[in-house]
Amino acid sequence: MNTVVTTGLVLLLASTANAGYIGNVVGLDGDEQVSSLSITAGDSFSGAVMLDGAGTRSDFALFRLVSSASNLGYSAGWYEWSTPFTTGGIDDFSSPSLGESGVIDENTYSDPLAPGEVDVVFENLTDTFGDYFSTGMILTFTLIVPETFGEGSFTLDFAPDTFTDGASIVSAESGQQLTVNVVPSPSATSLIAFSCLAMSSRRRLPTK
Image 1 (cartoon, rainbow, N blue to C red):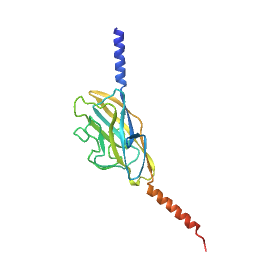
Image 2 (image 1 turned 90 degrees about the vertical axis):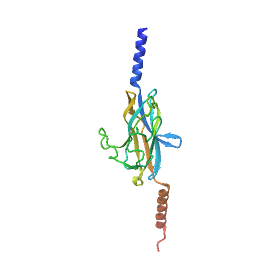
Image 3 (image 1 turned 135 degrees about the horizontal axis):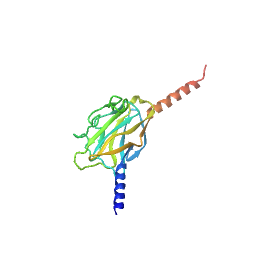
């Protein structure tokens, strides 16, 4: 009997110790969650941070969103927390804040453990004692690709800092990143095609 109880307790503690989050960044394409998006320079795109981890919960969340590209734009209302966290409330310490606008570069947020990274920080505490976030979509965001970006791609990654379940620390690690592919606009593509056609026609003109 004692052996069964002891074994059960050990398994419970092991399960609790191994509980934790894996944070994934996804793109939002309508109702779909995708691992990559294709947009044109100057356009905005939406994404979300997803936390996976069966049986895991937290009442405090602190994490960063890290971009491999600089100068992504944001405007007032650019992110939204999922319940039970309150967006823009007195316990929302995210930076840049909800009401700000600007661009994200190396100086937007300075993490002493990750100097020089292009990142923003999200931090929130549930307003009501006993309210917890479990798993799923913890936050959505909208960012703008600068018109000067040109063609290419960049990534957005989840970088965990601190999650708590009451007085207990909840482990977290990075998972899937979001890849954003920046492609030429249809008008730019048409202009290039027209220019090529015009040059080709000029080369065919008969000489006198």
